[in-house]
Amino acid sequence: MHFFTICLIVCCSMALSWASDWGYPDLDNNQDEPFPKWGGICDSGKKQSPINLHAKGALKGEFDALKFENYNEYQKNLQMINNGHTIQLSGFNHELTLSGGALLNDFVVEQVHMHWWSEHTINEIRYPLEVHIVHRNTIYPNMTMAANFKDGIVVIGVLYHVSNTPNEAIGRIIKNLGAVKSYDSINQPALVADSLAVGDLVPSVESYFTYAGSLTTPSCAEAVTWIVLTETFPVTLDQVNEFKEIESAAGKQLHNNYRELQSENNRAVVLVEQPEDRSGAAGLTASVSLIFTLILAGQKFLM
Ligand SMILES: *[C@@H]1O[C@H](CO)[C@@H](O)[C@H](O)[C@H]1NC(C)=O
Ligand SMILES: [Zn+2]
Image 1 (cartoon, protein in one colour):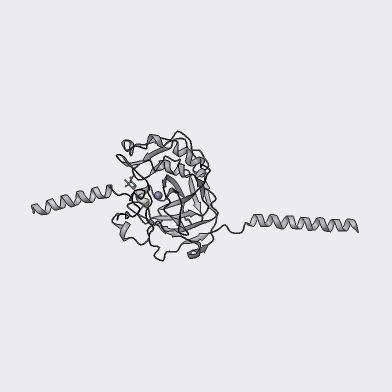
Image 2 (image 1 turned 45 degrees about the vertical axis):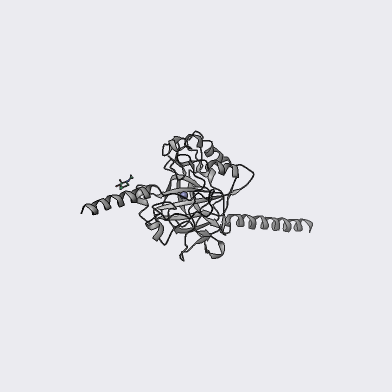
């Protein structure tokens, strides 16, 4: 009885410390360090993220355009935290609404965070940075509830490619890293001095991959409709290296925070590309017929 109680206490505390201590291998120091198992649905789930995305294996999709409301509004009271796993921005105006596409409800922006290097790969290519814009389905009152439902969360994934040109919006985030970088300030929100519009982090949304997946951090809830844009934004490696200085433990830098690729398990990955621009086509038809009319008119005039 005594022995059993002690076992229970030891096991429980082990499980607890394990759950709070989850992390990533330090691939800068040892490329062969395996990705740890995070437990629960992270290991047993069949709809986990991230995955490799490739046009060849995708189904063609055509939907109404995605609709973004207020994404270009500058957010003035954003908070930034280093939670030991990423840099996260929150405190968005709750009227930043995503709808349209294949989505059946309105989704609002809850938080934005980043992964260095990218979690999703496109055609097996890994990018230096991936920004996640996390949205909650407005039919659920909070993220905890939303994570229980398969239509609870939409994450827009934006990949960044290496360039010589610094990214201005990412630069504005980096300027605020000093306040949250060290382990001493972990989980302590700092006010973001520069205002930022979520729209500045989003390139063209005309073409994207979408599939049903999960959060890429524990609990790994399979509640996420992923929208990974095919257009990428530039970022310099110097900018990415600024994120690598974030501390995840005393004196320990978070050199990378991407999860390894997960099995696709025959899930439908849909590639949505901008349908033929009908307004543009109509415009072209109009101008062609105008030219035709002018030619006819000209001929008449000549006759
Ligand atoms: C989320 O909403 C549910 C239902 O209203 C509530 O019971 C729960 O306490 C909320 N959780 C948080 C973290 O706010
Ligand atoms: Zn993420």
